[in-house]
Image (tube, rainbow, N blue to C red):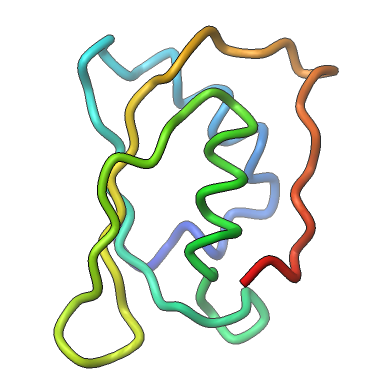
Amino acid sequence: MVHMYHEVESPYAFLWHMRDALKPDGEVIVVDANREPKRHGIPPNLLRCEFAAVGLKLIRLEPIAEGENYFASFRMAGPRPEPGQIRACKEGLK
């Protein structure tokens, strides 16, 4: 997902459903900007928290060049939680 994840209005539902399409050893790649969502980005810690809420673990996080963009890679790290078990992250995570 390149510069689009921050536009997802229901990130937990999106990620929860996306897990069905992910192979057991597959990776989810996100390229985005380290900015608040209202500024068309997502802080890496918030991204990590949202993915962890649906059982996806951060494997790699690297800055891209010298700007505020970054590359993040995630893999499944356990069973998919039931929707009622998902706890929303605080948007202010930096």
